[in-house]
Length: 469
Ligand code: F6P
Image (cartoon, rainbow, N blue to C red):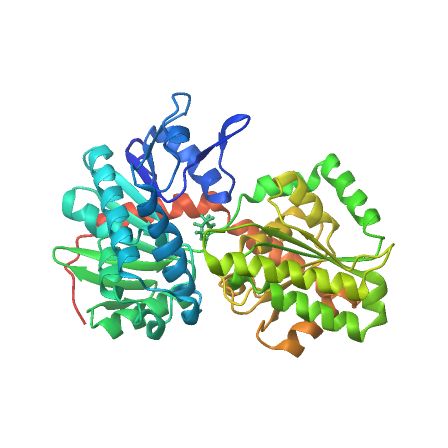
């Protein structure tokens, strides 16, 4: 079905444009690149709850962007507090990291209310409103109450928490009821849809199980929960992989690193990504193997993230201390076993590292789709290289040909890193990589966005009477 483009409203925490010293530029990330063409065509409105008003309301933008007017304490309690101090760790299984504070929950409710109000004000009659991510989970129901004429979609971009963990959130029912205000709630993989069904059981919310998902009757309408695996801008990364300047930069990186084997990890510096555990596993390999000491380099790109949250500041210090210790123990004037870049790299620089790396090491303790795994696969022009991927990442469900590893198994993690670093590449490796390339090509972010929007319109047009189980 074709998306009726003139009526789209997007609601997200971040804005599609950011102010830089060189002016206002497109924000990084695949989601933004997928949604921008749709927004340009629809001349719709993008509501950026946590964004800088200046960058949002500049006159040269191709469509309307609206920020919320929020006191800075409210913004901090919503973003660093309820979103990243409670919902993020809860969804990733780090219950002991969660802090549930009433004033942060109040700020979360306030921001969701404000976002719903701005969306209600800007959405034309009968518009499609697509709300994104865990920072804004209450918006669907709040918006539905104000504007029953709208078609409302929601996408939850991180793992759905297991039901037992979600129970400890003091406002778990409100969170789930908030989401059920949407006509279609997207999660990444069927595993998360099953976890959502467990949550409904736990909260006593009646629902119908269907082959592709769950249907929750809500008066005269339904809320559907389905798996919609997101992808990347496949052609964008593939064309960087074919670019001669990127290839030259990759050759330069390989030679600067001494010409041995290169392992690459790219993560926001987040405790869910398992960065310290990976560094420690590599340190043990350095202890055990002279071949690793002589021939293998780990490049860790660590993008600074959420540094207003204490757990993230502590983690950055631990990462830097661990890298320092490894250098002290195994580094020398001509040899540095680990390189840490604590900064954001642009797509060109990243692509060069993807080409230079003999293996991508993607070993989060828990993660959703982890698009770095996809980017590594898409950027490489030929089916070579290896992907080591945590079985606890949602991405493992859609990339089964990767070398899968349990990131909690210390010996297993070490030997898997050793294998992808040192074992000679065989025909089976190139068969795996060819299969992964085919999978990533099928999961493009454009297909994801247009497929979700088409399905959203389809489900709202279905008038079958709701049947509770
Ligand atoms: O993947 C979840 C997510 O919150 C995205 O929405 C966001 O782009 C990314 O993590 C980075 O987080 P933040 O916006 O807090 O820097």
